[in-house]
Amino acid sequence: MMALLLRVLLTVTLVVIIIMSGAKMSESARVFTITNKCTETVWPGIFPGDNFGGGGFELKSGQSQVITAPVNWSGRIWGRTGCKFDTNGDGTCQTGSCGTTLKCGAGGEPPASLAEFTLATPDFYDVSLVDGFNLPITITPINGTGNCSKAGCDGDLRATCPKELAVKSGGKVVSCRSACEAFNTDEYCCKNTFANPVTCKPTFYSKKFKEACPTAYSYAFDDPTSILTCSASDYIITFCSSRNQTACTFHDHRLICSGSKGLKSFARRWWTIIFAFMVIINL
Image (cartoon, rainbow, N blue to C red; front, side, top):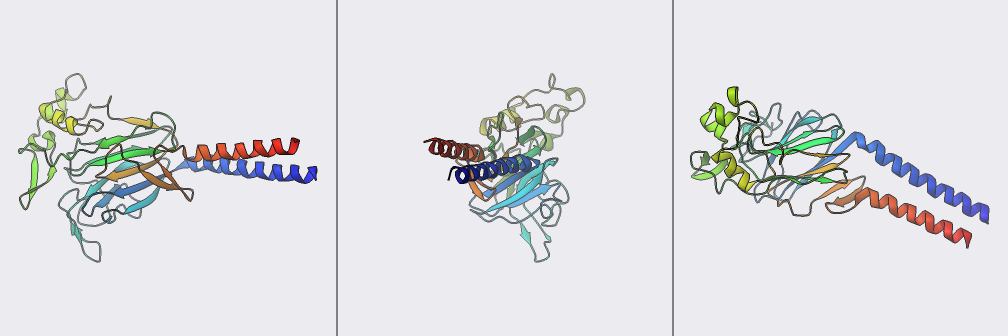
């Protein structure tokens, strides 16, 4: 009887080792969950998008899309609005266009709010408004280690955009240009004699962006409060959501939400079971 119990214990231990080894192996990829909480349809763009079905798709209000990014991927994700595509995927958008197709073979046309990633060890990520603003967008890391803070812009700059930066369609502000795009001066674009953090300082316009979006890049050298790092994390990119709102992703056939301990707590529960089983054996 004791031999049978020991064989069961060894089997359970082996299963746990396999599960934990699998979690380490999965560190070679990152799961991205892109969620639309806007009241309007959004057409996410991804560049480079070779690993993401061509880099563009439609996402209706309330919908989510799960994609997997290789560990060495470096690129950007943004939302396009006001799009009209035919059955061949040809068409145009009011904001964030990457050409005239649903699939993005290039970056989004400014102004566009960007979620930027460099996946490595650790990952670097940020939300940038250097190219202007068209949608609130946030990044929520899940199940990672390190700083792993939420990043992004949950304020809607379309409502407070200075009139000289506003882009309108049908009398409605659909996006907000950066001062660099609007005025193209060295000071606003941080170029030539302003191409360093000593001479390129926050301006009236970048401060307006920062007020609405305190954890997003407001100008080129806004690094200290804007770029974040995290290791072995999955990421939730959400349009039109508060940074404080709970966000969830689907990883290894399980739903994991921000604030949960994720797979690590799952492993700890297995070791608790093994410990309890050993106690029973020795009774």
